[in-house]
Image (cartoon, rainbow, N blue to C red; front, side, top):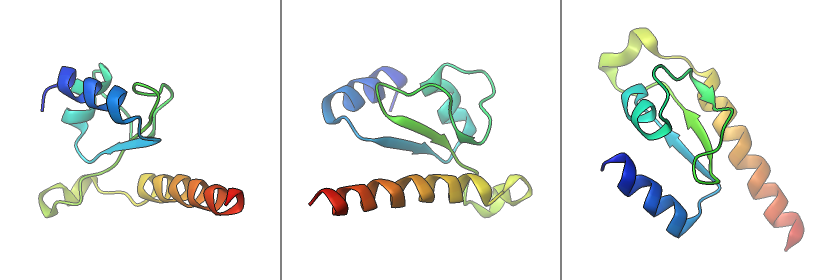
Length: 86
């Protein structure tokens, strides 16, 4: 999927967050040359953007758990807020 199609889908479906498990894909979608792992400073079409280390075995030398924990904490907080509101 190209960046333009991704942006259109995000505008249409309005997710709270999006996670990339590829720095290359994140770079293309976010327009950042070398995004850092973790939560990005700027949202992408209103969605909080996370760049996560690839779970591929080929990327194991770059793998780090912390960005995954950060994304999981975001999801858990959103879920808890929805449950409190219900």
